[in-house]
Amino acid sequence: MHINVRIFNNKIGEGESIFIIAEAGVCHDGDVEKAKKLIDIAKDAGVDAVKFQTWITEELCLKDTKKASYQEEQTGVNESQFDMIKKLELSYSDFIELKKYCDDKKIMFLSTPDEEKSAKFLVNDLEVPTIKIGSGELNNLSYIKFLASFGKPLVVSTGMGDIKEIQEAKKIIYDQGNKDVVFLHCTTDYPTRYEDVNLNAMLTMKNELNTLFGYSDHTIGLPVTLVAVALGAQLIEKHYTYDRLAYGPDHKASLSPDQLKEMVQEIRKMEKLSLDEREKYVKKLIGVKFWDLITGSFEKKPCEREVKIKPVVQKSVVLRGPLSAGSVLKEEDLVMKRADARGITADKYMDVVGKKLKQDLDKDQLVSFDILE
Image (cartoon, rainbow, N blue to C red; front, side, top):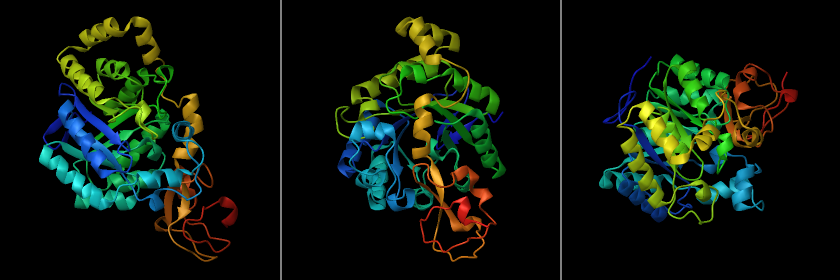
């Protein structure tokens, strides 16, 4: 087993301090000053890193892509996913400012790159020490290959995925010569219901993958995070916000500032205990029935709500630029974007490579098998 992953001065692994990422995500509402406020909250709480999400909307999503169901529940149905995330987009200059703000505050800056241009920016310009791969990319094997090739440690969320998909992602990463990876169990629903958590699946991932492991939490409150720590999670990622009542897709499923601080204190207290002692402590705190509900099944698979969300959040194959009829598709001609389940899913991109177009296609047009020879 690859025992440790080092992120700057932090070593992640068995017997090491649990690495805590405060996931600011999009709870800045597209406002750089609110993002700085979130950095202040994370610093005050004592986490190891604060993480955002970086994207150019046009590179991430087709303009008519619908929202996921949880996004509609939180922000309504009167706009497309493209329009929603465009309002939440921060510029590269904003992120340069936020990285400097983190450096001044002496807290680690991280951000998830949601498409290729932003990945290059984060690695080459901001020199992030690790790359976070979101759950929506788990079947986007060409993108995982691209991110693994930077040689940076990877933290990979696995929401909506089954164990076979995760093993395929691991193989792609290892084939790039990169074995510095932490896989996070996750349920992609905001907020996640306790009965959909299935934390025992995290242990299945640990045993099947033989890698470092952790948990990315989208539930309300602290109980599930504490159970994950009791089960041995080596990295914890938790969403937080400046105000849980604020308008936006993620606020409701996030911790308040006081809750974030409490979570860190509990984790630091628990990591001094053995796993048996941690389990006893948490069971006494939340009750055995609640523990059993949270730990659930050992089978790693999407829950019912994730099955519905998955097609909307994951990506489809589109053309990177215009091509004329008769062109033979090469891997570099293709890019993966959110398209609410239309076209060919990202994991089947190699089925397209080498095929000939029957008709002219413009940039951003979906590729489908019926237009291929």
